[in-house]
Structure formats: structure tokens, C-alpha cells
Length: 171
Image (tube, rainbow, N blue to C red; front, side, top):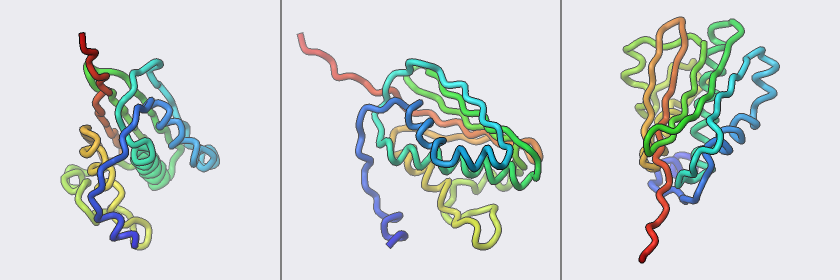
């Protein structure tokens, strides 16, 4: 059933959303896990960002996935680490940046990162569908995702989502 659901190409249920609220809800789900693992989360959310048109549940899943991957990368490094979450407006988009101080990835891995069933995790620890699903969700929202990474240094995901346009008033 899960694979059938995954394969469906349903459109997101769009509504006006404050992206910072979605980010905060995604974090709340496992904030205690991060504290117990001595992973610091640094927030730099621009206040009063305009709304975007989005499916909040699907975007929450995107951010949960990225935060969990950041946690795993930090744990793999076997060191205390930091996840930095920022948001700001750039022209007609809202940019979210999630950066970690984990193990990072080689250029070769980065080439395959958004492919279905590609995973860097060991057997039984990842399906290889998480980042592919994130990519697909963001594209369906009219957005994009980019990644930069250096082995041993960490990874940065940048998400851009269009700002919701209000319908024009007729004269």
C-alpha cells in the first residue's frame, strides 16, 4: 500500500501557509531527540514573511526528512553537531536553508542524491525515497531544492518556494 501511495501523482492541497510555522511544527516532532544527542539547532527565521500557497502537511514531511537526514549525518560523524535553519525572502520567493555539520558527501554521491531508491545509509536504515520525495513535493509546489556538501564538513540544502500571489482586484 505504501508503494502504491508513493507512486500516485496527486496534486497537493494548496492553502495559504506561513512557512516558518511549518518549519517549527516539523522541528517539534523530534526536538527532544536532538537535545538528547547534543545536537544544537540554531534558528534564524525572518519574521513576518508573506504566505505561500502550499500543502502544509507535505511541506512538513519535506522538512522532517531534511532534519532527520541532518541528524543522521551528525551522528555518523560521531561528534556534537549543529543544524542551522534559516528563512528569508528573496524577490518573489521564500528561501529556507538547512545546514548541518555532519559527515558531508562526495561530488559522486551528490549526482545521485534525488534519484529514487538511492541511499547512503546501511541496509535496513533507509529506503532511498526520502530525498526523491522531497524533490518531487517541492517541484509540485513550484519550488526547487539545491544541495552543497563537502566531505567531513557538512551539507546545506536550499529550498526556494514561490510567495503566494493575491488575486488582483477588479476596478
